[in-house]
Image (cartoon, rainbow, N blue to C red):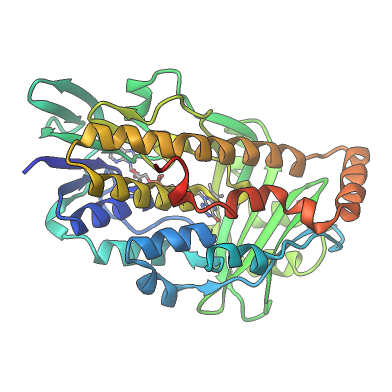
Length: 385
Ligand SMILES: Cc1cc2nc3c(=O)[nH]c(=O)nc-3n(C[C@H](O)[C@H](O)[C@H](O)COP(=O)(O)OP(=O)(O)OC[C@H]3O[C@@H](n4cnc5c(N)ncnc54)[C@H](O)[C@@H]3O)c2cc1C
């Protein structure tokens, strides 16, 4: 039997491993971390991701681990509503709802469904070579693994992508981000929101188990020494003029709960398939998180890949068809999310006042246009003859 190898045990790699195994393919995963625990905070799985999970027969296992989101408001720094997307109407298009889950819970769920013998931890790949026998994957521990087909899912900084496509370096968005998951007991947050103001953005979402996932984005130089040392006290000072319950949320967070990283993506690639090699997830089309679609697109990738692999035993052809179905959609998300981020991070008070007045004035229908363009299309049908 031909062998498939996946590099990277994130959402993309683990979901792909489960799905390929389900359709009877021989698959193994190599992950650089010695322990997989799903670092990060929460994330939103929009209706399209829930549909993809359903297609992959994984939805019923994921649903008990999170909860559905009714709405998600965009606010100004005083707490006035700038946009209130009617996610229920949009979700109706998919017959699915938007969902919030802690990253660690999703990882744990995926890990439980993987054959432990097919998962190899502590293995960092740094080079691949295609030859007559197939593909050789070279690891930093000196070992080499031979495979017929390779799925690269090692994330936005993908070492393998950068060695195969040297121009595909990550690009910095211009803002840096802190995240944490905390207890909701003293905040009692009921709905999610994102606040746009002159000192940056602040987002919050309730999670199951009476927890809150929050994030804050501030404009900064890349890899800033100043911000690398930022503490909760600094964030409290930065967001002091913002509406409640931002102050309480920060007060309830401990410094050791903070996760900090610069927000990066990759400029949309021209290719996702290179013969017997395929890029999926962030390795192929990392996006800034402004539309909350990175992991959603990784899960969509897997649903489309499985659909193609079921149709033919010619794997390079399936990879080519995958590319045709995925390039335009993922490009749209990366580019739209990049522009949303630029507008959301404006600092100039005059620009902010104009933007906010314009947003309040626009009918909801138009404000939701980008989201609708994304969610009203069934991704399984795009370029699928
Ligand atoms: C602040 C923030 C908020 C976000 N919010 C959302 C959201 O609400 N909704 C959403 O859908 N998405 C969201 N995302 C995006 C989402 O986190 C990513 O799109 C998703 O995690 C990508 O999964 P992946 O498996 O492709 O990559 P990753 O999660 O990066 O996994 C890659 C894996 O590969 C391993 N690896 C790396 N290099 C190697 C190597 N050389 N050899 C072997 N293994 C290697 C890594 O250790 C890692 O386990 C957010 C992202 C950020 C930064």
